[in-house]
Every structure is written in structure tokens, then in C-alpha cells.
Image (cartoon, rainbow, N blue to C red; front, side, top):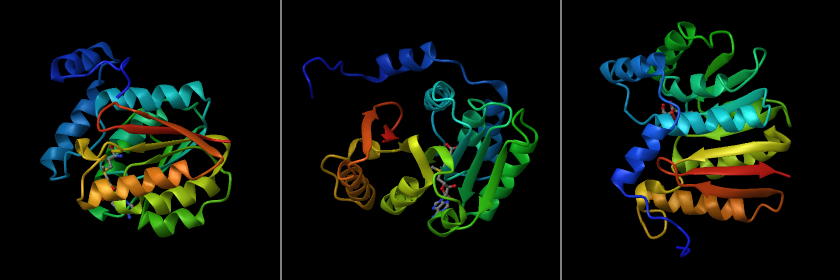
Length: 214
Ligand SMILES: C[S@@+](CC[C@H](N)C(=O)[O-])C[C@H]1O[C@@H](n2cnc3c(N)ncnc32)[C@H](O)[C@@H]1O
């Protein structure tokens, strides 16, 4: 760790979260309903949602591809960073998750801007045209990240933004030997080995990779 890095303990992190754009009632209700419907509580954190939304807005993104919809929490948050004619195409393998997400997207202020595609993203992403996306957010099975990276390099236009969650693997990314840290290290190695992709890791939530395709 660089000597200029400030360690973030739980107290400081709580302050950071509280100082960020607050979570709105719809996303708060969606989270509660998702838990009640038996969806796993693995959506991004509210401060990550704010980060994604602001990054996409600053980049003037119009078309965003997401891998891993769950209940639609991050898709709705990202859609809010896009213009009125913007579009999020989000991919989900689990039919129960996709149905829940569609219902909540429909009752959100972002209805009409988000399409949920059901299927294995490793296959369904192949249907999308090259260089058609301004941004792509990876948040599904970590063992698929290297494959999703290959799709992203085809789908993002030059200057497009790559975002990926969980790159700290719950803190185990550096030395962990379980499936997730090993998969994330392989992903980060592949990112580093891609000459036309520049990236940094933003330590928000479980770590968000932020990259730009040159
Ligand atoms: C971490 S959750 C996504 C959370 C969501 N991005 C959010 O923050 O609201 C991961 C989701 O990816 C889905 N998933 C896992 N493997 C997948 C695959 N191969 N293709 C598409 N979706 C997949 C899971 O079913 C789960 O709903």
C-alpha cells in the first residue's frame, strides 16, 4: 500500500456512505422486496450505485450493457445516469431474478429504458453488435469475467467504459485460493495484458474496476 493511502475502517466507511448521494425510496423498497422474494442480497451498495450513475453521466453514455441483473437494482441506478433515450441491456441467467427485475423496472421511473435478456450471458452477449456500447458493467459469476472481458472488448466503442464489481473478492483477491479470488486475479491479469484498456481499481464496496477502452 502506498504511504499516501488512508486506511478505511468500518467507521470511516460508514461516514463515506452517509456523505454520498442517499439511496432513494424505490431502490430501498426494491432491496427489501428482493430479500422477501428470496433473492440473494448481493446487489451493489448504494454508494456504488451513485458512483456508476455519475461515471456514466459524466461520460455522456447512452447504451450500457450489464452482466448480472439480479433484481434490477444496479440497472435502474445506471439507467438514471443516461439520457431519456438511453438504454440498459441487462443479462440474467436466473428466470426468477429476471421476472422480479422486470416487475420492478416496470414500476420504476426508468421503465422503457431497460431490457432484461434471459440466458447465459456468455452466449447472449454474442447477439449484440460490435462497438455498440458506451459502457459495460460486469457483476455476474466471477469465473465468467475473463469471457465477459473478451465480449466487452468487442462491444465497447473506443472510449467506452468498463466497470466490474467484486474485484477485491471480499478482501481475498491478493492471496486467496478459493474460486472467486483466483478468478478475479485471472480477470485482472487479462485486463492488464490488454494494451488498449487502461484501468484503476476503485475500493468502493467490494472493489470496482473502472477501465477505458482506448
Ligand atoms: C451479484 S448479482 C447482480 C447484482 C446486480 N448487478 C445489482 O447490483 O443489482 C449476480 C447475478 O448474476 C446472475 N448470473 C450468474 N451467472 C450468470 C450468467 N452466466 N449469465 C447471466 N447472469 C448470470 C445471477 O443469477 C445473479 O442474479
